[in-house]
Amino acid sequence: QLQLVESGGGLVQPGGSLRLSCAASGSSFSASPMGWYRQRPGGQRELVAVMTSGGMTNYADDVKGRFTISRDNAKNTVDLQMNGLEPEDTAVYYCRVVEPNGSWGQGTQVTVSS
Image (cartoon, rainbow, N blue to C red; front, side, top):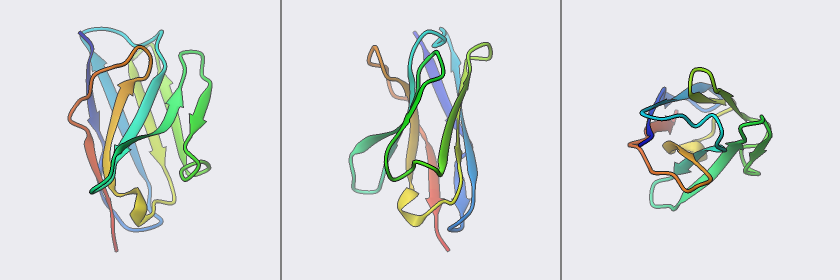
């Protein structure tokens, strides 16, 4: 089965940037739409960015223009570049196959605080 490992999270100040990475093993997601999700403290897990295998993207309204999703099908990786980070972006971030419904990894913590 497909295994996904997220990395790149950390502590940053408001206005800073981070690049999250998601590496797959055990299978390939090259033909699958991939998503980045986040779960804020006390909140529900929500989809923030999607990229299809053909490169089409969609973003949640509150990250549009600040976050950019990218993928390398040959390397079986998907990244999330996050710029202009805000305290509201503090969350655990996960990558997952969007369709068919994928499984969750452990995620990576992003904390935005001054």
